[in-house]
Length: 123
Image 1 (cartoon, rainbow, N blue to C red):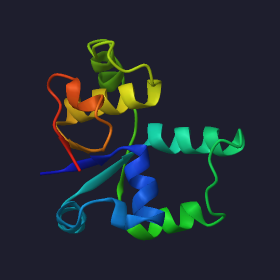
Image 2 (image 1 turned 90 degrees about the vertical axis):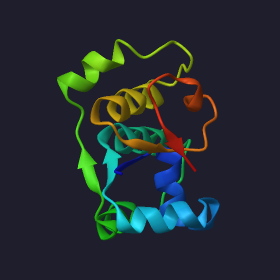
Image 3 (image 1 turned 60 degrees about the horizontal axis):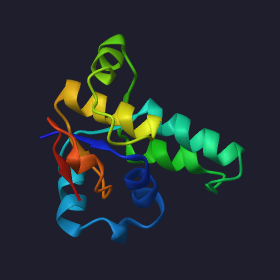
Image 4 (image 1 turned 180 degrees about the vertical axis):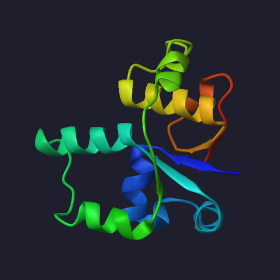
């Protein structure tokens, strides 16, 4: 199975990997893992606004993990139109749309996301 990292999961893997269960970390080492451009956009925006502190070598460390980058496509945007109005966070809503469209397991500890239909989450 292939995985899509929620933004906080990505940040944990880069800075506090023990916050993610050992079985999931082991699985992530053996399977294709995607990072959405939506997450990178969220990190950049929150960093510039002073809401999130990231290390100066964040992108270099990200490159070392060799995750696959998942661009936002028109198909993802089309799927976004079907995402139920449970969660107000636009970044999470896009991740849900991407995970649904690409049939990816979403790595998250956000309990709100688990309430969506047609989405599988792991933590």
